[in-house]
Length: 145
Image: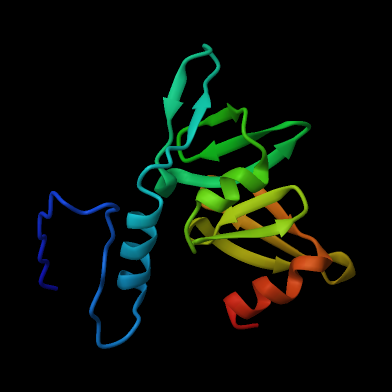
């Protein structure tokens, strides 16, 4: 892909424009990166240090009262933002699977059917997440089942 950057000091507002033959995952991801560049996801670790969290390392997010917990490949972090606020910052690789849980679709290792028609997602970090019935159609469409 060819990239042209034109510096125009007189611009009132910066913008990006893409000329593509067709939409691909690569183009979509690039667009999301440009749009979300100013938004940084941070969390607090067990030592009360503020840590910048890379979106690609996030496995799942859980709502807990007025804040949320972010689970990554390397650990978990508390975040003072509400789940819907972080959801708006995340790319297309993330999907809500219940009222209080969002997962990174690229971190799903396997899927199992369980009681009452629900699905169990086994994540690559070893955790398990249940898909509630409300969100089953979306995850089934994504998985093609």
